[in-house]
Image (cartoon, rainbow, N blue to C red; front, side):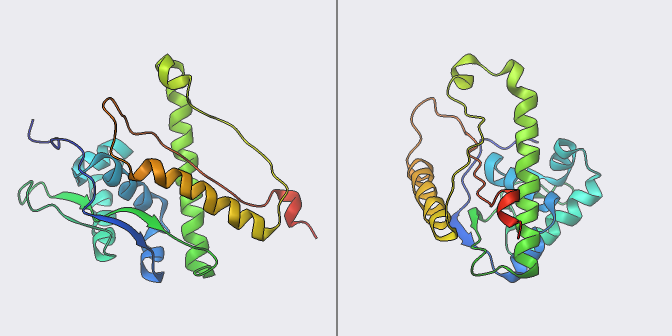
Amino acid sequence: MADLPDSPRPAPHGDITLDTAALRVLAHPMRLALLNRLRQQGPSTARQLAQHFDLDSGAASYHLRRLAAGGLIEEDAERGNRRDRWWRALHRGSQHDPAERGGTEGRAYSQAVALAAAETLRRAAAQLPGMPDEWFGVSAFTDLTVHVTPEELAALKQELYAVVARYRDKEPAPGAAAATVQFQAFPADRALEP
């Protein structure tokens, strides 16, 4: 079928460290969701993305053009035609260090990431009743509390990133499927009280 990509292709480049302009573009949860979809599922058209996210195709096109202007996606010239433009992600992932780029843009981006993660978790919750036993048995839906200093939380974050990177960077084994690994680390409400 001409509308579907042959198979998801990884983005041509590794991770990108987000600058202030990219943080502004990605501060919108829908743009972040569109970019993540292109990264995970491969090239797509605005029409396909609009249908997936229950969006107006004009709104999807607008957000895609903003992502392209921010250097995060590009038109996939190997596919489509003037009527159906295909888009692809330029990078496998985004890196943002709040310690380096906090500010208004960094906080807005982090809020968009949290909202997108919540939506991903909501979709996973809807799939739980029909999830195959082999995947359900190895999934994790948990909340853990640790008592740490800001420095210890930074070290914990880096250690967890390193573990995920080992699996992310390896060649997929036969029968491998994409798995979402969400990671949030932030002070509990009580920790922010005076």
